[in-house]
Length: 136
Length: 87
Image 1 (cartoon, rainbow over the protein chains, first blue to last red):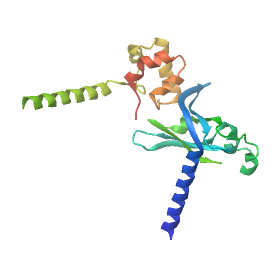
Image 2 (spheres, rainbow over the protein chains, first blue to last red; image 1 turned 90 degrees about the horizontal axis):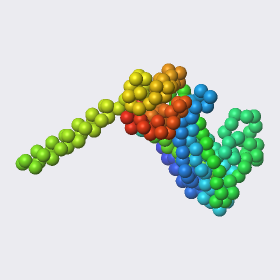
Image 3 (cartoon, rainbow over the protein chains, first blue to last red; image 1 turned 180 degrees about the horizontal axis):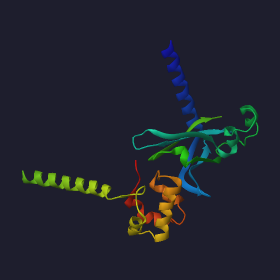
Image 4 (spheres, each protein chain N blue to C red; image 1 turned 60 degrees about the vertical axis):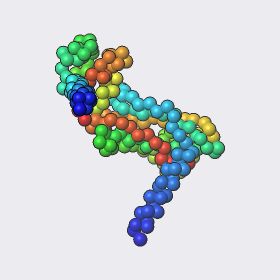
């Protein structure tokens, strides 16, 4: 029974990821080290494109920094700029925040940006994986 | 038999060259200012790199050099193939 439940959960997760990837894609992914008044940060930027025929309230993106052995060193998720409030820690429920996001028009685009503080990364990494994990 | 030996020697030569080339890269996390100057950085740039390491901890990527004040794109392009970090 447990195996069946696990299998179903994996299947649902895979289906959601596949659907998300169908509705949005990431173009022009840029990565750069920055010095913000002495604070060293690693920033990932990308253009989020709504490839569907309907507006998207948000696109959730996962960024994983991977070391030379393929082991994740740091991992975070974030939202397109118009929906960044969904990921912040300000008061209010997710549903309330969702009412105030700026949807991405069909075939429109928005920016995605996510920064890691250097101490948050901690270890050397070789590559970066950036992928759409959820859309709505 | 002789062509096989030649091929083997050629492979060994290329392999040895690749290994030697990797070993010769300067580790940004232990490099001295003098070594960085020898690679082509100016004295102030080299001191900035060492200072960055002392203040912000070991470099996590060679590309982190771009967060060091005074390290321009040109300076980065000049040395990035000759340096490495601890991985």
